[in-house]
Image 1 (cartoon, rainbow, N blue to C red):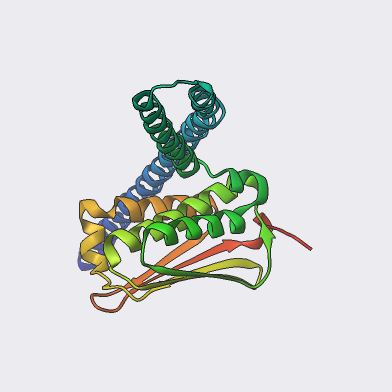
Image 2: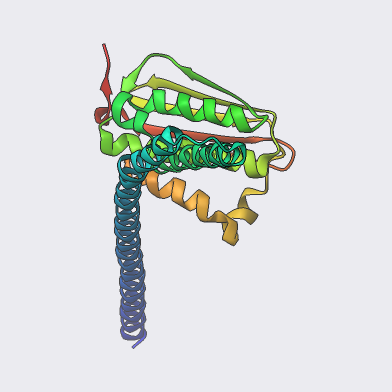
Length: 252
């Protein structure tokens, strides 16, 4: 009798274990499926956003820009003997110059021409030069050697660097930002380091301010890479990006 009870207890225990394992396996599978769907959704949103940016940038640069330049040329060719009219034309020409400059800056922010023509490192250098004109943050770029990514990959890494630079300017209160690229064990490495005020990583990731960080993570996943963030209040912020080199075409 005791042996029978023991067998029954053992059978019930095994059944409970099997049900529990199946339950957890189902949860894991559901979580993986959910994460895959979320990644696919984010990838679709990012891809659509980049296409829209490219189209708008093209419309501004190739359409509105030349049109405004033509208007400026026509105004400059107007002759008048009235000093007040000449002053008005000069002011109008000045306003048009400002508008043309704004259109070019917006077009560049949407999709840098340099990224399309000369690649990632030159686009980052151009970004740094533009920031230096408007901000006091000292940004330095280091690269072991020149490299090129496929265009569809370069835009994601450029957006990540752009996001990090903007975050440093807006939130870090930093004086210096260093951006470095190197290679190691078949991977392209990117390390950014600022001397700003830093932040509580866990608190930021739990709040609405984490959208930028999640965008960085999503773009890194698109590149089959890994993003590591190291920050603490008063200790500055470091981003480390590691991307498989098989996706990279090296310039010789």
